[in-house]
Length: 591
Image (tube, rainbow, N blue to C red; front, top):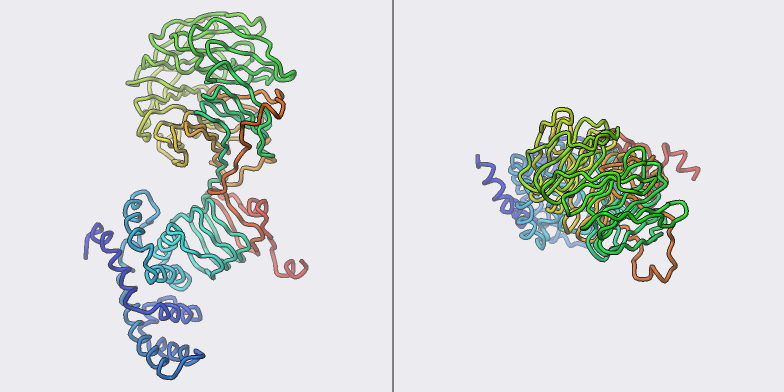
């Protein structure tokens, strides 16, 4: 038997055998198998019964001469042998064992697609293999890979019957099944992000272990996005960037609600935990805004270089800020006076974060070190060394026992706060790690980097759970929603993306009612500084990308199940998309 590599290389030659038999023969065999109970198609194709049924089907064809029918019968018998031979070969190929949508097969599938995208007979053969999954479980992975290839080639699959097909271990990103019959189909461990099921028949489906990452893309900044955050009630999203602006988005209407203009680049913004103040840093100053009245109440002067980060203490009484001058400043929010200046770093301080109990402040610097400061005594408690380049981000876990750090040495450090020892070093990014953020339950860590990717890590095992791709520029900021279901990311591609990382359900404004939580002192935005229309004329409205969003308008769902990999019923998601869900035929008749 050929090696696995040889098999990968000869897949095109194997599929090219389709040129030796007629497309009509594939259609005839598929129609005949549809009416058979035999679950072994190879065995059935070797029986005389198949020839009898082929002859019967050909005889029933109208508008064909006797001579044409005799020719069709002759070719039909020969084609059955060729089809049987092909199925025997493909059965033992890794195309019928492995997931060709996996990263390890990405290059192989790209080369294959270039060869077959214009080959009509091969495309028809792939469709045949998809239908074959409904009859013979031996070919489920083969058919699943075939469907993946068809979708990647953007073959028109609309208004076709895929009744009872069985698909597993693949991804159907952006698949267009408009008005298709998928009744009785079975999906297992399938990514369905961006699938279009408008007016499809989804009766009696069994779709399990589904993965769906709904993505909203917000375009409005005209330069790099430095920071992103959710409002306390989840109805708004804030972002700040190198265009000197802070934008507040209304998630429900898709409009920009408010715009704030800084003196220069806005690198950092943050709400006070009691939600009364907004602080943001622009140029050498920290500005405090009263959220209720929508007015600036103070301009904190003391920094001599650009402010990089801002973080409130948990009691909202103190504020920490850092700049490009190696120092961390502590401010009294009530008196608006400088309390202390923490000196120790020997280079730019890129990030600062309070511990959840407010007793410790962590700072990360371009001097390759992290320092932990006793907030009460304003003295350095410890210095954490382990990275070999700049520290761009620090974040405490919700219980305060672990500190995460992101560095330009392309790694993430997990530190034991009590001992100051590095517990683990996580590798996965191929470039600088700009931002790290714990989920509210502390089980997951998100990271964004200069390689344009977002990674989710299992904090307990240190293993990567998922990787999200989509940005076309460095990811500068990552932030979990208070409920931990949504991750917001801001990028140098000038866009913001929202990723559903937990339930796989649609990001609906009405569901975002979680309470506020500070995560890595990420930015939060004042909501009631509404500027006149003339001031917003140069900004676009919120653009919601449909590229990764489920569409299921008037899809018909009767019985069946649609469950994601965490056991969450997705029927509510389908209903929110306009699907018609009934549990029995009587309900259909009544409606």
